[in-house]
Each structure stands twice: as C-alpha cells, then as structure tokens.
Length: 193
Image (cartoon, rainbow, N blue to C red):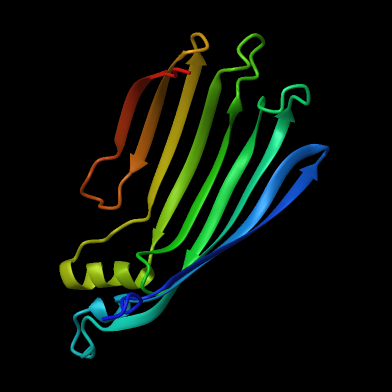
C-alpha cells in the first residue's frame, strides 16, 4: 500500500486585494479536489429500481468564493475598523453539503473610547446534498432540513491583559423533531507577554 493509495487532496486559493471607496478588502476563490473515493449519495436510496446501493464515487470537489471588505477603517491604526465578510461554497456529489453560505459584520467597536473592543454578528446556512436528503426521506421517512445559524458576540477590553465577552447562538437544526436551540455564553481571555 503506497502513501497515496487512499487518495490525494489538492487545495488552491487565489486572493485579490481590492479597495472599495478607498477602504481595503479582498476577494478570494478556493478550490479543493480529492481523488479519495466517497459515498455516492444517490445510491443510498433503497428502491426496487436502485440495485447500486452504497456505490462509491471517485473525485470529490468543493469550491468557495470568499470576501472581506472594510466599511469603516482607521488609517492611523490599521487594526481598527469593521466591515462585511462572506463565503459561498459549492460541493459535488460525495459531499454531505451541496452549498454553504455565510454573511456577517465584524470588527473593532465604533463606540468612542472602546476602539479595542471586538464585536460581530453572522448568519450561515448549510444546504444538505439533495441526494442525501432524498435518501433519508425514502429510507427512513426523516426529512432533513437545511440548517442555519445566527451568532453575535461582543468582547470588551478590560485592560491590556484581560478581555471579557458574551456571545449568543441561534440554531435551526437539521432534524425537524429537534427544537431550535438558543445558547448564551460568556468568556474571559487573558494574555501574558
């Protein structure tokens, strides 16, 4: 058995730095390809016509477009600013997810005197592969829904060594028989030089 017999994964990213209204940002494209075999999800459907149960597919890919753009930026202190970010990704058969999307706002606090605080809010959605959803419904009667999450956080600088923050998650889970989840958390971070 050779070191590459289970497959090889290639991962490439191209990034373009850009300015919009004089504010910095970037755009990037990412492509991942693996020669490793994966389950052909269309073969999971147990039907009289489907004699290829648990077939494999070779060559799985996932591609994503990502961006980040400042909407407010302090030229005197390049670490301070806030902006929008996002990602849109697509996968081939053999990926559990066919599409993944994310959009958010984050950065340093725009509140005067609290420039070293950090905050953010983001939404993401995970679209299950149609073949996987169909197989789940046909085989077990379970309808798996696309899952989405909203997260918000604020982290305040106490002093140069300590930060404290809080965050909240809201999750709509994949399985309809589970209730939506709300989770609240707090965190303290210490940095020692």
